[in-house]
Amino acid sequence: MSIASFSADNFERNGVAVFPGAVTSEQLDAFREAVDDLVTDFDPDGVRTVFSTDDQSHARSDYFLTSGDKTRYFLEDGATDSDGVIVGDKRRALNKIGHAMHDLDPKIGEFCRSSGFAGAAAAVGMVSPLLLQSMVIFKNPEVGGEVSTHTDHTFLWTEPQSVIGFWVAADDATQENGCLWALPGGHSIPVKERFQRTASNEATEMIVLDETPYPTDGWVPLEVEAGTLIALHGSLPHRSAPNRSSKPRLAFTLHCIEADADYPESNWLQRPDLPLMGF
Ligand SMILES: O=C(O)CCC(=O)C(=O)O
Image (cartoon, rainbow, N blue to C red; front, side, top):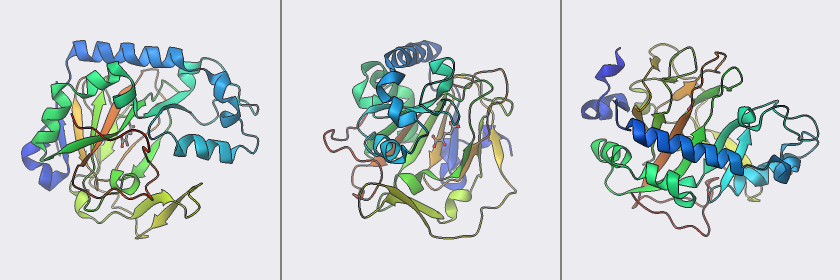
């Protein structure tokens, strides 16, 4: 199946739509500058205990669970020594930054509110999108980790299901440097897991709804040029392989939900002091 066929017109059937050139090279340059600033602002010493491997699971869990309305930095596995000190360059150690830069960082906010994102949301049928989650995904050369098969509805549950992911390649993404893979049509399979806060509200748990695995056939590599936006239905299984190449694969993803959908308090991502906004 050629990815050129994944358009907004058949999003309902495939659960994925590809928008080449949705983001201009000027907008990508501005995005890169914003990322450089975020990396400069990152003070690993300030959160060393979070990264330490020494019985810091509570600190790590808290750092993640309170990141829904903040700008937080997450590292690749094995990027620190046992005291939480980053081994080598801090940018190379980063796996991602999340999860509210679209509202906290003016440059990222402007990037998200460019016509490419809003146009794609309208094209795939969103009626009143709210910007819920943003992530800068580094997938750095040689060390960028795998993202295992998942659906976004699993993590950003609404009733009814409404989340759509808008993923933008800041570098050409190929199988070599860890492009996205998706299972077209797989959004018609009911999601198999739900990730939520535990009753204590201090940890998270994955509730398994269906133990059968997704089909292994029919997966498609979404190899795209920089500036391409990919819309992913919330129930669409997708994943990406590690980047073992010498090439960068920087990306940005924005997850939106419908304003009239119910957003449960048990979802991991909460924004107690930051109301959701639209484009
Ligand atoms: O960029 C990646 O490799 C994975 C992104 C992803 O799974 C997502 O945005 O939901």
